Each structure stands twice: as structure tokens, then as C-alpha cells.
Amino acid sequence: MLIALGVMAFLKKTLYISDMDGTLLNRGGELSPATLSGVNHMIREGGLFALATARSPQSAQPLTSQLELNIPSVFINGVMLYDTAAQRPVEMTPVDVEVLPQLISIFEAHRSYGYMYAWDEGKINIFYNNLASLSARVYYEQRMRVYERRVYHSADYIQTARENQILYLVMYGRHDVLQGAYEDIRRIPQLNGTLYKDSYHDYYFIDIISSSVSKATGMRRLKELCGADEMVAFGDNYNDLFMLEAADRAYVPANGVQEAKEAADGVIGDCDMDGVVEFLLRDFHSKAGEFAV
Image (tube, rainbow, N blue to C red; front, side, top):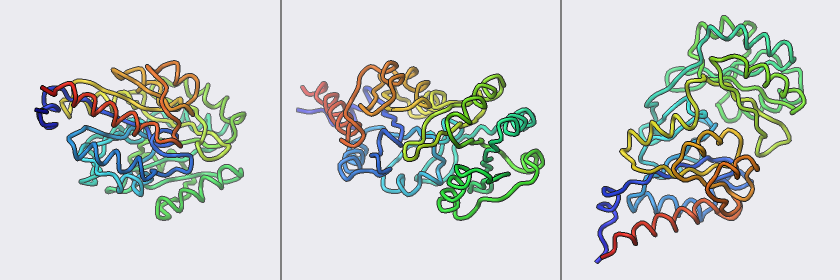
């Protein structure tokens, strides 16, 4: 007979954790019907599945609401473990406001003023200082839609930061503008900055978070909370590198950046070909087969 999947999971628990954009989502930023049904099927069968994304819970919500997630996921590149079912944070690590004067001087030096994301009673507020560039206006308009117009002007970032719990900051723009800022941010030991391309536009992000967290730290904490024995990670971009390196096994879709592929154990199907869920179901069901007697 086949040992029940619930018993199998007790004998050896594998935590599958996936990035969203460019990995689990297709190039249109959507969960395909095959991916949605496949992930939910695995969860119903007792599989452990979570997300590890640069998105906040709020910007991910239209997608996560379609998934039957029953364990917390890693949001904001490791800043927050968030229970999407209960709609509450489990843990979060804000930025140390004492380093913000250094960071703001970098914004000013490179004439790219960034955005601050603050936690406010279960919601995220976004603060901006300057919308002079086209990329700044593009980012502003996108966030106004996603964050229910909770996007506010701040004439004084330092004062705003002292009055709010700042989870992270984002710079957005052309690569040639952000590259110098990225090099300067890397010199601040209390901060972790990651420069990577927007999956949907010809602009780049720098995500700026506390140096004490990453997708990898979030994944390890989730493994501990779930009592998992093994971590299998999926990612495609530069902000996934720490997670891919920390996983017991790591896989990158064919559309991923070369550096991610070099950090992985294997390359799977393209994000437009449901590469993650195809591998996920095959791997999960092969483990079920190991316990057939």
C-alpha cells in the first residue's frame, strides 16, 4: 500500500519556497491556471509551500488570495514573515532610522530620491519626496493603484522616519542612474541594497532593507517554524541569490539571470511554461513514491 501523504510529510518534511515575479508568475505577472491548480493541489495533499518575494503583502494580495497558503510566507526580501490566511505579520525587521541621514545624502547626490515604506496598523503607507523624473512618476502611479492611494508626499524624510516604522526603502530608475547609488549604499554596513531589473519595465530597483535580513534568513526562519527537514527554493533574479545559496536544493527557470543559474542545482522550465509547478509536482510525488511499500 501507499503510506498516506500526511504520514510521509511527518517522516520527512520538504519546504518548497518560490519567488513570485519571473519565477512562479508568468511574464504577464499572473498565476497561470496550471500553476494555480498545481500549487493548490500540492498544498491540499499535505505539501509545505510558501512564497519568498520582494513584494509586500499588500502588493502581492491579489495573487496570494488565489493560493491556499496555510503557512507564512517571506515578504519584502525577508523583512517580514506574513501569514496571508490570518492577514497578519508573524515577524518583521524595520530599518534602523539612525542610518537614514547617510542614505538620504546618497539620494541627493544621485538625484534619485527613493520611496519609504512604513507599517501603519496593518497597512503600508508609502512616502516620496520628489517626482521630477519619468521613472519616479511611473513608480508613483503604479503604487497609487496598488496601495489604495496611501502614497504621501514627505518634505522631510528624517522627520517622517522618526514618526513611522520604516520597513524598507526603494529606489527606481535607469540603470546608469542607480548603479552609483547602489555602490554607495553597499558601504553602509547596517543596510542591504540589491540592484535588479524590473520584470515588467525597462527600469531597475534598488531594494534597501536592514542588513540583518534577506530572503535566506526568512526562509531559514520559516523552515524552523514549520519543522521542515529540507528547503527547496526557486528564484530567477539577483535578489534571490542568497536564498538559492542557502537552500538544500535550488532551481532557476530558464528565463533567470545567469548568476542565479550558476548558484542553482538545476535549470527548470521558463516562467511562461509553468516551470516551477511542473518541477514541484514531479518532485513532491516522487517523494510520495519513496514511501510506497
